[in-house]
Length: 517
Image 1 (cartoon, rainbow, N blue to C red):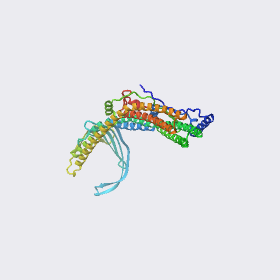
Image 2 (image 1 turned 120 degrees about the horizontal axis):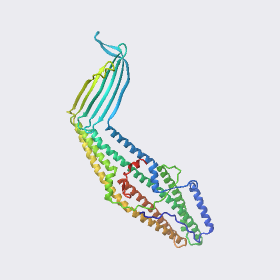
Image 3 (image 1 turned 180 degrees about the horizontal axis):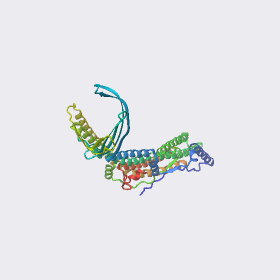
Image 4 (image 1 turned 90 degrees about the horizontal axis):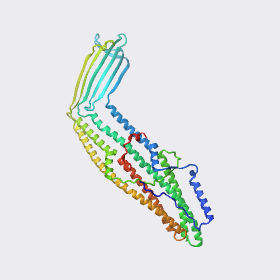
């Protein structure tokens, strides 16, 4: 259920019996001149009315930040696809169809018992089909291969030779105890889950940035309305003051004060218009709107009737926030570095085993006939004997870095939990602050109207009127600032928890729809 709040209304000037017809015409002409000088676009371009929700929707669809966030997610998505593909079989065709070589080569002449250089002309061709499969459990690789080679000597001999490996299968494995595939399979899904939640979070961050610019423009529009009203009031009061000065009911210093207020009101109006143009340009640039677009922000007059439980919000934040997932990823990566350093500090080696069939012949018809067995087994060992503590130092450094990261993560997590609790507490109090500011704004407006009427009939001094006007302006600004803070807290809690407490659903629940928007 929404709580209705009063909308903004400029002060209406009520002319009294002191204002004659000639003054009324003068005031109308003055206002027309001011509008023609400062509001030329109002007659040539209609303003686009936007609510806060509509502004955020436009930002999510066409702003540069939204485009950047989506492409950052897509980069992480394709990195995850690469990880998934790395665990599947790969079939590769390797071919060197044409390899011609003509050169002078050194050969040994047995008749003359010496080396000689002779011209040599060769042609070679190779074709192979290779199938690879990584084994995540052991970190090794199993492969199968079939190949055919042609070697032909050109020239006077013109001899040809074919070599074939119809089939071979092999396995290679590192023996140092570090399984890269195992660690990758633990880290990469976590990185992708973090990327998905960061994309959802980026939409809430975008909503915060949009609301800041939205209320900046609201502030600027309010300042212009206040300046317009103050200018009209100052003109009216200055004219009345001159009439009263003639009859002796207003002193000279009070008249000078009224004239000063009138001049200051004109300067304030000019500054307010410049501020409005600046805020409008900033919002247009952020939303990707044409630079000449004119937007008028509709101040939100309804607030969600919502109170958030801090314990529930903290639980959602610890479950959904990508920063927490990033902490888990950091610790896994540090554990991986320690494991890699340990494997490098001990005995290491590799295993290579191969079994297959091969044959060679002078014609291609015979190269696949009665192939011979081909076998190979190789085991290599690397034993560190003397490295002056280099490997031991690498391990100690990796373990120290892991401890530093662990402490940093604990501190960051404590600060994160405290931030969530404080934002929830401030949000729960802010709705009441908005209601109080709205009431104060209404009371200040009524008080200023009464004070102005009493001044017009000569019962109050100029200083009293100035105080009432300043109070009315402060109340209006305080109301807008309270609204700004409420929506900032609202979107910040959504950003931290990735949970919509108003609808009681997770913001990641419909991820596919979000990414396709």
